[in-house]
Image (cartoon, rainbow, N blue to C red; front, side, top):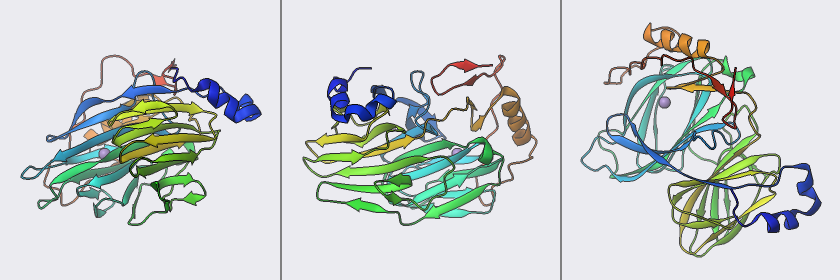
Length: 325
Ligand code: MN
């Protein structure tokens, strides 16, 4: 907590800030986690101090890695429930296959959005002749009650709205920012946007004070709301801001995450987002028994077995990390 910018922010916002909690900020470095057999990712959410940003409940940043002569990303078929997966690449290529029959390569600048609803299975693989570099994000969005039991769906968006000026190129990947709206289907008010800053840029990005936000640096060091943010780290910005300042001395690539605070307590375990231990146990049982999630055709890898459930009961946690029930 405490970014040194609280006082000036409060003055800048004048009376408008009074309806909201004072904007906070919290710097969250990631930690390395293996993904599949060949890839290591930096996990930025969930963390003990901060579990969610809006409905964003899972943030992995991978690369930049040199994967020339190596398999690249090889994630065998696995199930999801209760969430959307967002895949965003800066370098490389990944082929998505799922149990709806989708077979979709993705390259930088495009969006793959998979909505699990009640259940879906997918695999993600670098193709045999992949580019030498790999760099990107894998994000999850928690689905609200009205959507989490729905039908699975897959969307590929080859083009997305872009806001461009001399200092910055902003791609609205999901949700809405500064009047531009992504065509991707979302179920809660949120935004995910890539911000590429030119050399020595000073930029102000308009924000919705009813949203909470975080900024991830994918490359380069940037001063965000007065806090120095290193590549691979996430800065949580809280609620109540009407803009965020970005100040870079060199080119940088950021990803802005935001959304209306998500109030439902969640149980997140393996690849499942649910509301209770029983729902998680049922999802695990359904995957193990070959029910609900379907199968992924034309993937040469065997499906991932679910790990054993822990001996303790899984507890729901709210967005502050407090256990419920
Ligand atoms: Mn997945």
